[in-house]
Image (cartoon, rainbow, N blue to C red):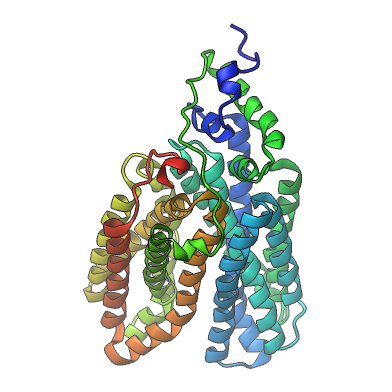
Length: 455
């Protein structure tokens, strides 16, 4: 049999999504896509964290208060709230690739404008614009992986993309270590570094194909046919065997945006996903953003607190990589519940511990498992919404979570004022437990299913 022959008549009439889902293994094209998507996520996270590393120098040069710096940091979350909704809806309307590239250009341009900002109000406006672009990119990335990778491996490749992306944090941290000490205004160059996403963004314009599922649903199947045929031939050439027959799951009906909330099934999924993200982000940022400050408030020296946070910074990459082992093996909603319970227990140990190494060990477990859980949730979110509402549905959940991130700074500060160090980390434990319970008890079964089966 010639492995590069055109598909048989029955296969040729099958839907492109059914043919894509039957691929028993990934191709070289898939491997290239995930590296490019990971690079986009890396630049996204580097830009997101640029403000945190520039903040001390901004405060010193402009003479602003810690509260003002906190407000500047929070503006990114406000932008991300808008970006989740806007980016998701636009990607459903105009395509994943177009909005991914446009959002990358937006945040890169806004980041460059941050580099020349001359006052706090101006910088605040540019950070809001940056946040809009950053969250639009994140939302489209997780949707793209869900739609373009076969059902048996899409969770693993979400984890790979996240693991690559997390390298953006040490990248911007290292850049800050080199750049900021060079002079009083050199912090501006951190925002220039944050704009490097423009490079993989423009590369995606020429290398990344549009989502097959999006094209098929929007009457553009002819454009995707050649891509699917190429992927099929590549798998045949690598395995030397014919592909399994495609299994049709029925065509997805078209949905209007309003049906996301009007239809009971869709509305339930939006509520579950959004509440899951609200509690997850309150727990995630409540822990990670406040550990250095609150360790000092508890009595540790600044040097000891920074040593602990440096040790903890090793964990995120390992945590995301660890999701590779479990995300496609067991049901995602159950994995998330177990992970959140373990995180909550470790947070309580961290809160109550007075032993230095027990504190470090519990913090390391928390930081590691938080990223494992993030990889699981990122795989889950886009799976539970129909194709032409997938961007908007996951965008609403992500955007609502980012709004919680904005409020979280005020919430955690109030808890610390009333209940101290122990109260803060017991609260973050409760937040994480709530996130796991909501998803574990009310979420959908998605692992191993096609997106059409789920919807």
